[in-house]
Image 1 (spheres, rainbow, N blue to C red):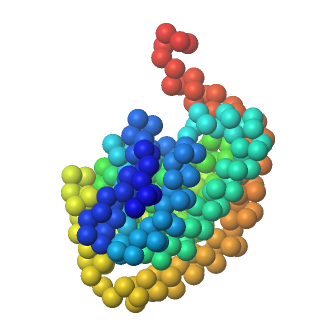
Image 2: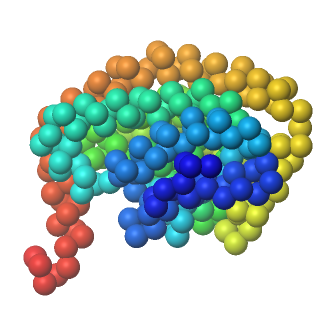
Length: 262
């Protein structure tokens, strides 16, 4: 398997592939190098004929903190980079929806923004009891495009999806379970073990029946993505020119500066 990179590790456990976002110092924020590695992941795992199920998790204390806020500054200033980033975002959603092997998210900590979108685009979601999801796009001045507006209304009521996408409020694991964003909530120290056990349970099922049942179910997601994503991504790209994002990024940077630098 050549898919492994410094920012994304892949471990084989029999027919199960455990994929770990490996940027713990930034809470596995979806910087461009990690997004590109994730986009390449699905084709390369698709060529691994011994793989049957994939488990996604994050190194350290987060699943993924979502967008890399310091990278937003360059995205605001560089139109070519902005266009490339949004092409990648559309590709990421499409590749996950098309991927034929079952994917289990083991959400070991915060799953925020794009991180939350990736988590719930999996087929099964396990969450640690101390984890949460949130999509703060709107609070950052951005249209909530890449995944949340596509998948959340399929999993909870449209009213609930609007509430949490508008406000960006955190959804604790137990609430995510009751809303339909998660399948199971387990103790944090047992999360990965339980997700891998379940992965092996799926891997023991007849492969064609399982994979094509997944693909049939994901036609619902694909239909939603085809209807919603082109407008949503275009609108989010426009958000970067509104001035709100630059102001919010500046506020975020000011909060993070040590007192001696203020």
